[in-house]
Length: 476
Ligand code: FAD
Ligand code: NAD
Image (cartoon, rainbow, N blue to C red):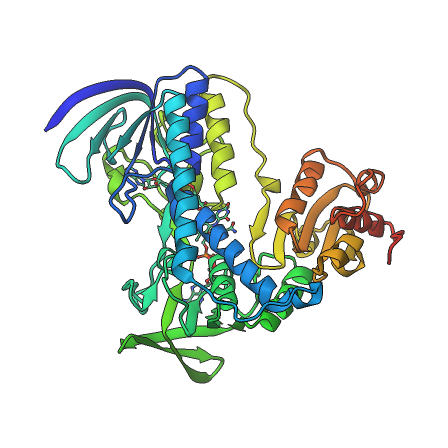
């Protein structure tokens, strides 16, 4: 039975990047805000920040960074004149550090919401009507109802499971399980060579696993510019990731703690035996608990909530943002939607350009891009000019000892406007920001070419690639 009834200007379901950022901005703009989130840590503690902070962006980057140090010690230290022997990897300590990073940041979200006077409910939210949300504490059966003029769904996403490889959290894991392993598996199999497959594969490969990745598609990273994906495949393969394209998993049998994966590659039937198997075949909208049917909020054929360009669902006062509406399932995309929607709700003119959302895959070298690929330009009938520049020609990359990769800038042949930037290289995740600003400001390659970049920095690669568009690079 509902205990009491509270009224808000806006109730937000979900405190992931989309939900908590939206809650803060709504509150800054003078609204009375409630944010409901059901996330409970493995230790049974309510924790905010959603997928990104608890089991996504942050813990994966913490382990990627730790494992990158191992990679440095094993592969690069010697060249720098640093002799190390008997490197010991203590996975439980690595995991503890990761947990601490997560704890600090999720605690930070709680403080931010408190400071911004957002009422936080640790509970499962479901619709009772278009303006009434039932919030039910997961542990107790206690529930209450919240009334709101507007309701924003930011309930995020969960991993897609495949019936032939059901996650058992022992031998078959999803990304959450893969980020919690307490020892390095000797043989690790991964289904899916997408973002998660490559990031998890990189972590555990650097920590000593033999990693085999089975990918159904014939092309490696098909949404990435071909020049970059081709080079990335070469480098990652050299690092030890055994990426098997056109590999369709047919059956998985688990016995004695091992997974035997049967898959086809062309007409051939093949077997792969591994100690752990990670399923990383994409994510789907998390809407199960919401009771969407009651309010008739429409979803598409894949289950993502349908919204118009103002993030309004099929019901006028109900909005949705973040992973739950699909598109780029990225934390920064959700956060920007949260800010823009809050501003729209108070009548401000908020725009968000989805064309230049930066993408990053945190392998090493990193892969980052924004805007169009060369193929997308070609398919759209746009005539282009292309400038590329390799990291090996950069003084700073040489000094770092990280010379793999390249910059690629694509411009409109007629106007010189930058249409896409693609980077494979160290710190590509940071370097891509300049490209995003340039594209958002509709700059030309000439603008970048005439902008002074500090020396010696990796950003000089962007400068040189811009010069290369006009065939006038200096340093190659
Ligand atoms: P979520 O973060 O999924 O949050 C939704 C919240 O809603 C959750 O806390 C959930 O418990 C809550 N919720 C759901 N239903 C209810 C309900 N009925 N009642 C109450 N609460 C509910 N993105 C990047 O940009 N960069 C990265 O480096 C990156 N790395 C990633 C690594 C991994 C391993 C994974 C899995 C994802 C990664 N992502 C990354 C993607 C990123 O995590 C998501 O895009 C982002 O978290 C989406 O934010 P969101 O707020 O839409 O949803
Ligand atoms: P993904 O869509 O990136 O990759 C899934 C891969 O699995 C695809 O290449 C697909 O062809 C393959 N696949 C699907 N079914 C298969 C099957 N049965 N057998 C073999 N291969 C199969 O999905 P993901 O890697 O699970 O990541 C989900 C989302 O999470 C990403 O799209 C991204 O938005 C987000 N994410 C982002 C980051 C980041 O920004 N660095 C990191 C991790 C996750």
